[in-house]
Image (tube, rainbow, N blue to C red):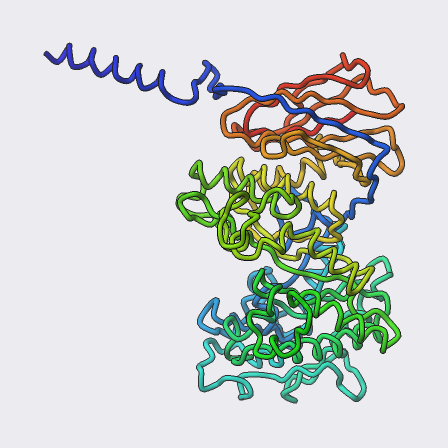
Length: 553
C-alpha cells in the first residue's frame, strides 16, 4: 500500500510540473512559455538631446556605485541646526532632538559641536567621489536648540528647545557662530561654506541649495516646529526671500524648490488653507509656484528658481492593492513585481492612463490615474507648465523609489526610470532608498557596464519600440565619439522570450556590437555576447524574460 502511495504521489507531482507555466533546464534556467516579436528602431541622427550627468544621483550612497550627484535632505534636515549639528526627527521618531546626523555619518563625538560638520563631512565625500552636492537650507522657522531627546507638545516652538531661523543676520558674519543667542542664520551658514569651499562655480564649491524639505507636510512631519498647515503665501514669501540670500552670496548657485512630497502637494500644496483663494485659473499649485517665482525673479532682476524639484514615490498598486514602491513582506510577489515594472510608464507614456475620470480603463492601478488622469503623464505635464509659466527652469526629482532593491523587478524599473530621465530631459535625480544589489546594477548598467568605468552616452537619440509594455528601449551616443552607439534594451515580461528586430537608421554602418547585461538569475553585470554578423544595420536578438541588455556598437 505504501509503495502505491509513493507511485501516486510521483505521478501527481509530474502532472503538476507539466502544468506549471515555466519549466527549467538542467542549469536552472527558467524556460519561457512563449515569445513575442518587437520592432526596435534606432536613429542616431534624430531627436538628439543632451543627457544630464546628474540624473544618476542618490540620497543614500549605493555600495559599488559612483553616483554623480548627492543630496543631503529628508525630514531630519528641516530641524537641523548647523551651529551645533543637533537635529529633530519630527514624527518619524518621537520628535527627538539629538545628534543622530553626526552619529549616523560616523563623525567622532568630539567633533559633534564643530560648526556644520555634518555638511562639510557630506560635501568632502562628494568631492572624493567626483559628485556634486546639494545642501538643504532650513526654512520652516525653527531648528533643534539641543540634543536632549523628545520634544513634548508643550515645548512646541517657540520654546527653549528651539532656535529661531533667520535668513539674514544683519551684522558681521562669523565662522564661529554664537550658539547661545537663540538664533540660527542662513547667510552665516552660506558664508561658512563659501569660505571653506569657494563659490558654486569653483572646482570645490557646492553646486546647489534646496529650499528645505517637503513643506506641504511640515504640520504632520514637524508639528513641534510648524503645527499649522503651510499656506501658499508663506511658502512663496519664504522661498523668494531665501533664494535672494543665496543669489546675493553665490550668484551662480542653483536654487532648488519647492521639494514637494508628492501629488497632492503638486496639486494643492496639500490642501493649503489659502489655495482656493489664490489659485485663480491655475489647475494645480505647481504652475502657480512657477508663476510667482518668475514674477519675483523679474522684479529682483535675477532668476530666483533654477530647478523645480519634486519627490515621486509611485502610487501604483498591484491587483491585490499593495503599493509597489516599498520593500517588505510580499514585495516580490508576482503581481506586485509586474505592476512595479510597468509603473515608470506614468512618467512619460500618454497611453498608460485612464480616459474616463473616476474609472480606470487603462494604465496603472492608482488613485492618481483614477481621479487625476489629466495630469499624466507626469514629466511632459510638468515641462509644459515650465514652458508656460517660467521658461528655462530645470526639473529635478530629488527623492524617488520604485522598491525591489534586491529583486530583478526593482532593477528593471530603475533602469527604465533612469532611461526616462535621460530621454525626457530631467536635469537631476537622486534616489531615496537603501543600497541594494539590483539597484546597484541598474545604476552601473549606465555608469560602469564593463567594470572598467565605461559609461552610457551623453546624447540621447531616437529609439522606438513597437511594444513598450514588454520591451522599452533607450539609445545614446557620445559628444566626443558620435559613432559609438549604445542601446539599453529591457524585456520586462514575466515569462516570455522577446525577439528584438533591431534596425539602425542613418548613413553610418554598424557591423558588430558587444552585449552586457543582468537578469532574474543574478544582479551581476556580465559580458553576454558579441554580435559580428550585423548586415545593413539590421539584426535580430533574443532577449530572455526579466532581462536588461546594454548593447555597445
